[in-house]
Image (cartoon, rainbow, N blue to C red; front, side, top):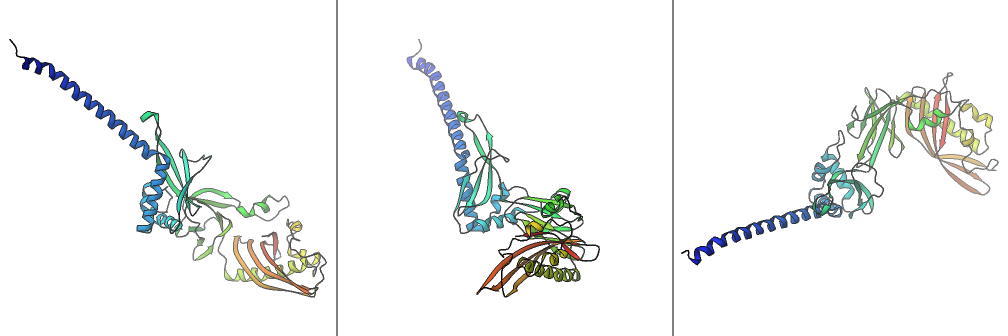
Length: 361
């Protein structure tokens, strides 16, 4: 006859195994939910952004750069390394309160995006990507997809001129178009009566920059500075030689004097129109200074005259910017007109440079 102890042992063994299996299943389920919820917590956009901001602040403070963050998340910009961009980003964030703000209506890459703010100013863009849907409890998990700067740059350059953005030589990686009219010549090009030949330039594009670099062009041994004709659009023309610049400068000063005297009625239209190309679309824009047509005055003079932003589009089309103070003395007072003009000068068949277009800035 079997003992009670033996029977009890035989019956208790399945219960022990069952209990162990139940415990293991409970642990597995608990681990699943714990891991899933931990992953979800880490994948919540707010938590992702909090962690990213903390990482950037720590790296700026300890390393003086954001290299590690950009190595991990930085958007690839041909020719610009994470080391270079890390220093630039750190300069934007240093000694400032770093926060973030969601971008509403985002339609770029990624599923959502945030601005990184430095003292409330937009310094960078972060995009998030939904890496998993239908996970734990059907919750979506996110990851940081990319981190890049706010600045996009377009450079319009004369053919055969090597273009540099800072120290970066722009190459075929950055070339996005050819044979385009430069941004600031489009108004003249679209003018129906224009007879001045308009050049076509190559277009280079850089996106996601943390700064807007100086632009220059090199043609052999000569170089020229690029001119920003819009906040994020620079034009690089042909290098000018010193003799040509001297001739054009002298002509520009003469034109400036004639224009200002015309504006203050010290010179009639017939005395000024000889300095304009016959088809120039400028007449309606000429009288834009605050000088009355028949202002009585005793004298006038020019002060603080500067010539800036030279662009030689072709050997027969040059633009430059004139800034000066035009001072009118009369009627018991002295009035200073702070003047800022951009000339587009065309070389005509008689060897004279004349205004093809003029803009009052």
